[in-house]
Image (tube, chains in turn blue, green):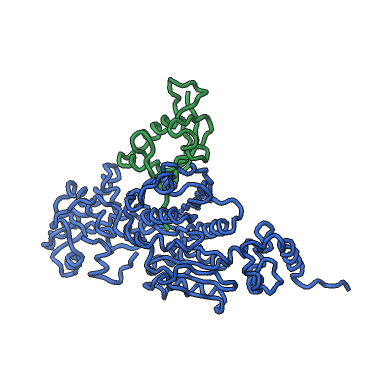
Length: 472
Length: 105
Ligand SMILES: [Zn+2]
């Protein structure tokens, strides 16, 4: 009978050999921690760290020295949403020493499909507190330390421990530099341009590399800013554009796996930055399109000497754009900013509409849903006709067709209404009561003065009339 | 004579061009240029501008005779700032991508 090797013996031998080989070469800044390993780990990992991180230690080009460096480094995740959930999860399990979580927001039901850190019962709770709870379950309870941002200037990474530091007031103009100061790398997992520019400027001023991720719809982007002499966000895109605020998940939608992929890759780039491993995306941008699973990595321009943020004579940051405090405030309003001021008698309140829809009403209502067909199919008021507002605005055949069918419906309703001595109204509605005003302005010349819109849209309907109507 | 280019639209810009993400464009060579010199980015932008059907869509991609801020232009996967910007000369088979920045998270 041949002698059996103990299971996993080859792995142990390889690790031991690598540790021996690295023994002499790694007595630099990490030597202070070597006492923790009681002498048997050449680079100073604790026994628990070896047990946990043997697999990355075995990767030839990564190895125990880099793992140790990762265990003793600090990463900040700003925005713990679709990108931040997976990024924070992988940074935690990968062994980063201090993980900062910065977000002021609370969990919304619409977050759950792409933010696997949160459960149904977390809805309404602060994201950061829920994230701490979930991430804590991934590490040893005895190793965990949780710190509030208030009152701790600089955290030491203690061998064998994992610290989470919370920044629950989010990123603001007043705190941005203080928030990023103690970290070795910052991950931009936010969801709006103003916070992204604020974070970029703070990272440049504090000399922190910034791992930028973004996703909308089926597409994602990833790059590393302000690292190894590479460009920052303002080198490529000098100013935030208001129009950019339009492309947000709450309006355009997003499929959960897209930020999932990008967020995991943000953790990947952050770990590469922290451990000086491989080739980061500094000076390059990865663009991913999930629809046909295509991606490319573009070569970006270098640092711009004239950049207002990282250039040779930077502008006083307080005179740069005026980012709004917090994450989502800039984008909660509808994007269609150029809404006409609609006269009050062209608008109905939700309760006015509710009264008109009652069985004993003296009024007959034709409801027109001017949202996108997908939103109409998802949830709509009963018996409403779908005419997307873009169709209403376009001087097109589609409008002619739509308005003909609407005019028909209105005429039928009018006949029926007059048969019963009732008056007819055409009520346009949308999600928030902005697009519906544009639709009314376009439809009145065609259909006449009995066209009105629902003030506040479906949000107001839910708030004032029917709280069982889905909120999205 | 015309130059055959592969032109790609991403980040929502495809909506301006009938939701086509990858297109093939045949851009007429200007009289001042020999066919061997190809066409300039400037000529391509003019060529694309004519294909935008809705007037209100033009500003989503173009500003004046160039590309609006926030749209990254890549010539063969390289930032056009490195290839000569609007004066970059394009030849048969070159790839140009218009990448709109994403901000969602
Ligand atoms: Zn810069």
